[in-house]
Length: 134
Image (tube, rainbow, N blue to C red; front, side, top):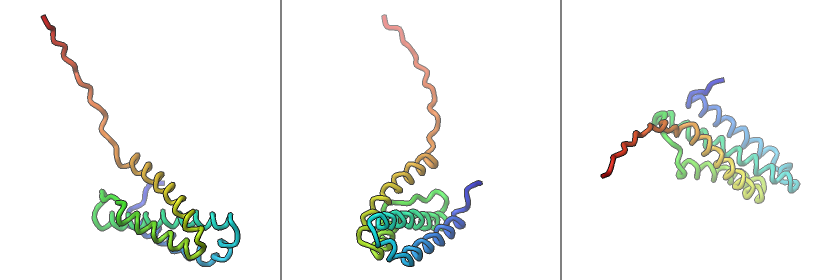
């Protein structure tokens, strides 16, 4: 299966962000009921971060062109704040775990992005000329 266009990816990521947020609010009491569930709530919040960042970045690529990069401010910062606020509506421990899981996800997103978009040209061999000294 191939990659989809930025506009399709933006729409899909936005819909998934809304569904995740609605699910977090629907199951708020269950997610806040135990220690393990608050960790799960933070993980779900980090997924909200990933999909929100994807939606914002693809929207910008749709508007400004294919090579437009996502920067730390405002794209990553806004997505992280939105995910942490959504997690905070569930439980305050979810905010901390959301931040930790989001930073891990951001690290791997950055590695994937670097591997995909920063292709360098193969090195060209350099012929060395040896000069004879007398």
